[in-house]
Image (cartoon, rainbow, N blue to C red; front, side, top):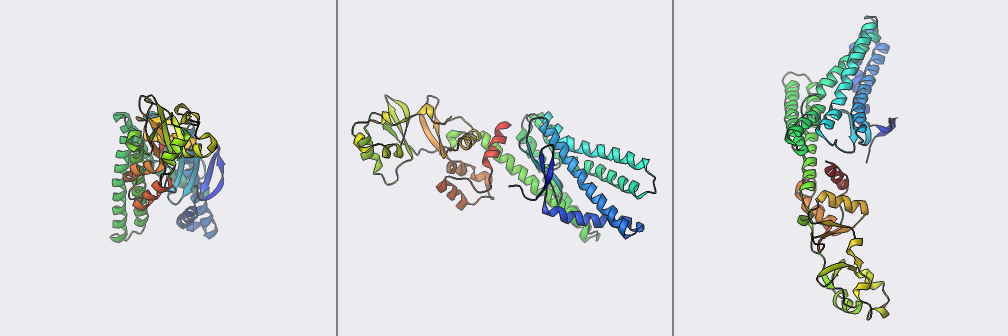
Length: 398
């Protein structure tokens, strides 16, 4: 769920301000205002606020660059959010090719460099002693730093996305690209933390705390990229045959409803459905409800042929279908479970959400507990907040 305060939209993209943005806006205003104290308190604070707002305006345009590049490839952009550490564009899916991924990644820094050139030229046109010229030049410099900083080659920065695209192009694997870019991002993040803390405690430069915070943010997000791509890779490489359970029973389609009821309805834990077969061929599915909703006077005469639901009318997947395909099919059709067929069209298993979570548990640890996994199996559900269908869709798209 999107959090923060919605302030409008650009090109159909919702714009949000995270509540942490107001904190950094105040801090940035104060920091920049101190640079203009010779102009008097009123002008100094006005200039500080202007620089802070233009800083975040530049960040917004930077993220808009990524967003428009993604939209040109037919990718949906869900939102742009400004927050404590800058901004982020929520893009619905990955680009299809390394070249397209590079285009989306580089679009943001190109916007920043473009703003640097435009504002830099603008500041030269204005009188050099004018406060407006000084403020414009400062914002131009900020955009240069923003563009260069984002080209550092490690996720979650744009340079990490560029590196990912390059490794993807070389290896042919997007997963490999993300994994290496995330590892480098973590290394760079730890270096930033170490450097920032060194500045703070040894050199008494307390601005180092900010560097350390940015490093910590980079580490956390780089790890998130690694977990995300590991989960995607698991969804693509894991096949239905590895996930399915065998919670069904094959019954004779020629049996009467009475024979079926006497044999199976009295079980303590009846199965959710049964596979009706005849002449060595699976014909369709029979559920307990199909029996119960039939007049008892008909049970002695009707056979299972009359109430079975033919296999071709049931949503199914093959044994070789990826887990991403299984999840997408189940969520699209709102199914509690799905039938798995062999190459010859026989029922070989079923998959529900609990089966999916049981297999994916090792990829989600430690973010999901054993108790949560058991609950998912018992309730046939996914953990709250886990957008597994969206992850599966992205994995399929790539």
